[in-house]
Length: 76
Image (tube, rainbow, N blue to C red; front, top):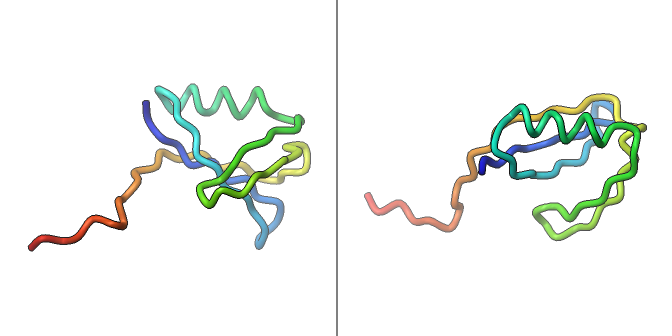
């Protein structure tokens, strides 16, 4: 499974981000298309619960995400 970052933009300053796991970019895009004009709910990486009406979203971006472990110490 790959991790994808999905960002829902309401305007230039306001957005909500979530992470999904699918096998491909095409599957991620299909999931987003299937959620169009619906209420969805999810908990973000900070543990905050969101209920979102995708009908109010102006732009959706999907990109593959490569998570970096911030707790890993550089041993060089």
